[in-house]
Length: 64
Image (cartoon, rainbow, N blue to C red; front, side, top):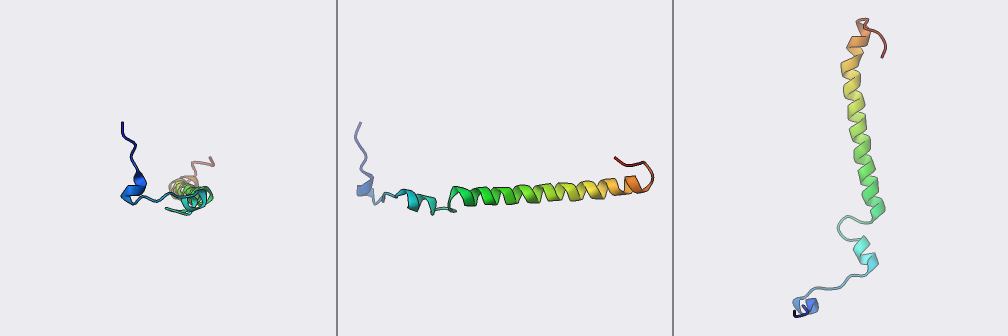
């Protein structure tokens, strides 16, 4: 099997710092975005449950 020389095809090597700052940043920025999404999802679930359950509590079915 022949060894493919990527340098001949115009591919450049990247060091660790360059890799962390390419395509969206580091692991911490990924986790920050993920936690923001989870926070939004949980907020939407709580708001939906509040809209559904509030009328039931108000008509006297009782507390949950």
